[in-house]
Image 1 (spheres, rainbow, N blue to C red):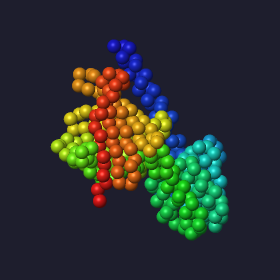
Image 2 (cartoon, rainbow, N blue to C red):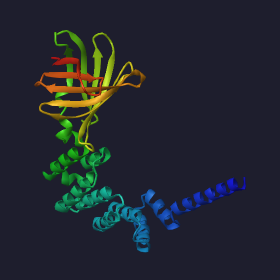
Image 3 (cartoon, helix red, strand yellow):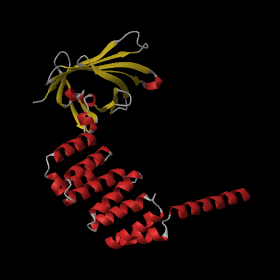
Image 4 (spheres, helix red, strand yellow):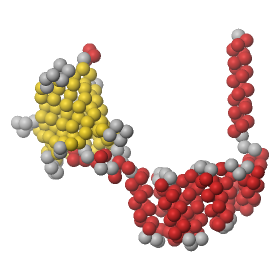
Length: 303
């Protein structure tokens, strides 16, 4: 019992110490209050005093830059943002703010230098892209032909799968398909979509006699391999890993049978041109010694 009380007391003390350590100093709290009230000249003075007392305070340097910028002191704001960046405080944001200040000063070359630094450091999320397109401080920069190059780089970095040759290897399967057996009878339909900005290819299978299933297909850059996870409406699960070579996506994997058994699988998608894909499935129940055809389907693109 005494030990429990001691542990609880120690935990409470530790929590209080952490909370105290994380709470802002009175000077910083006052500066923050002025900043929130948009009293820019006063908040700039308050943050400047803090940075003189503690030159390692990245938040103070960043907000000093914001206060100076809002007061029209763009040159001083640039110095503050550069210091925040050197302290690794909100690095992409500090770089972008420096670019804004240079744009207000009419120094386009320096504005683009810092804008490119910001994008390279990760200033690519949707809110940031909206800032690039709409911020009035950037109006003069958007008139420059170099701005299109920056936005093209933002597009590539924010949607890496759309610009990755590897991640686009399975695009030939994307579309609306009728699916036939070798004798020509309809066995189902499939809608294959590109989602998550091209990082996932989603299969939506519907069998002619009922039954549905979906698979997620994606290029795993950490493995340098394609992966597929299939789950159908009866709970069957299959997992595959493979690569695109010799005009086909070639998967190998396994299905876990009822009772704990394992069935080895080979699944190959042959690219037969713009409007046809062959999906060839094989299975082995003896550890890969022999293989039998599971199915052989031809996809015909719906018109």
